[in-house]
Length: 204
Image (cartoon, rainbow, N blue to C red; front, side, top):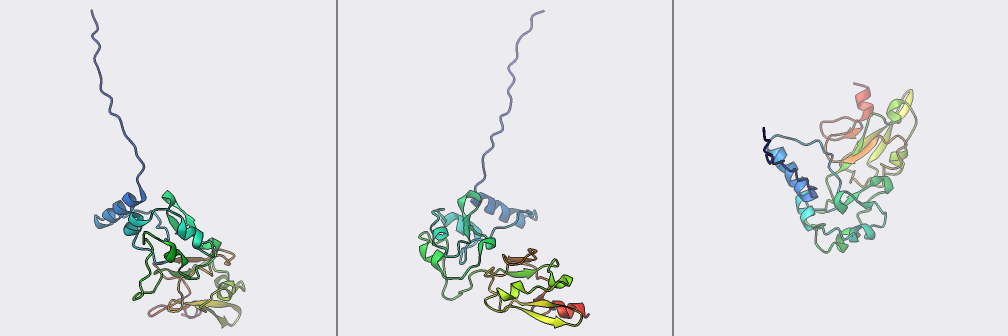
C-alpha cells in the first residue's frame, strides 16, 4: 500500500497592536452597541480635545510635558501625555496649551473650564473614620474643602463642587489615598444640589 502525502493548510493568525486612536473608536462603538468596556479612562492635559480628536491631532512631541511647571504631565500608553496627580497639582497656567502646535490642546475663551473633573472623597478618609486629619483642606487653593466640627469626633470634610476646579492639589498629600480626581460619581463629603456633606449624612 502506497501512502500519498496530502498538503494541509494551517491558518495563520496575524496579531497587531491596536493604536490608541483605534482603541478610542472601538470603545465608542462598543458603548453605542451596548458593549461597555471596563478600561479606566486616562486623564489628558487640561483643555484637551475629546479623546478621539486628541489622539488624531497629538504628535507625541512631548512639548506639553516639557512645558509643565509642576511636572504632572507624563507619557502614557502609546506615548500620549496624561496627568499624574501624585506628582503635584495643575496651576492652569496654560503653558501646555501654548506649546501644543498641532492644537490637540485648545483653550476656548468662551468656555474656559480646563476639564470636567472634580475631587472625590472616599470612605477611607481618616476624618470620616474618627482620625483627626485636615491635610486635603490645608492644600486646597480654592478652599473647596472645609471641615465642619462635630461633637465627640474629628471634624468632617465638606467638598463644594462649585469651588473645586479639579486641580488635584488635595490628591498627593492625602496619607491614605482617599481622594480621587475624576469626572463621574460624587464622593461621600460632596456638597451639591441634592446631596449632603458628611456631617449632615452622619446625623440622618
